[in-house]
Length: 330
Ligand code: ASP
Image (tube, rainbow, N blue to C red; front, side, top):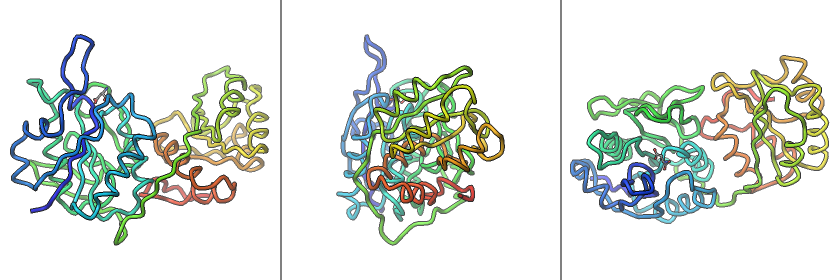
């Protein structure tokens, strides 16, 4: 039988109702005891790494999770991480950069309703996560509501219903039908994963609204090494906002600026319109193309943890990791 490590970090799945609202309280052993059929799939060891609402997860916790897997990688055939849904897509992306090319499954799951509720998605999600962790499913993925989503492509797109996650600009890796994994795509992997440990958390995100001026961008750029600007459509900056000059000044000062889009599907294409063309061609800002915003945040933290050299930042940013960017770069 395969040996799987269950790593608990909290979330709704482990929550109980308290006077102050739902709070993660159940241990990994308690979670496991709610789904006895898992013992028919694999042998399980448990670690209670954190017990947090995922709103409280910070990048340091991503490092803690990656180190936990790293330290026990040889001892297990796969890993299941239970996690709150709110920031699970960020964690899945971050783990995809911190643990690259893993031949063993690293599966994140959680739930929209606590495991103790009469109507809950916790049990099926937990069971499916173990099924996937015991299969040949390399890399980091989210298993949720019978679907398997690549870690770099996941986004929480529904706040309440069981279909909480979507795979953005990339197909699902597979589905679970009657408890059987139908794998559509097998992620490429290496013989052994490459683990990273450093992150630079000085990465900020600015969502543009019509009428925005440069003040907020100036503020964020003064305090951070990188700014992601979530602009409109295929990408650009309002011409009377002062943002173009702001971005030029920041880049001259050695900061990294990435343009992405508020539109969920199909990504950026900055050179198309006059409002974006010079940013791309004259200033040479980076653009996210088909990447999710969660992946852009995590990738920049990973890249800037290693280098601040402009060419190297650009090279790493456009080099696909776990299929995070498919658009032909450059
Ligand atoms: N607030 C919860 C969390 O992210 C929501 C959930 O798990 O579904 O931890």
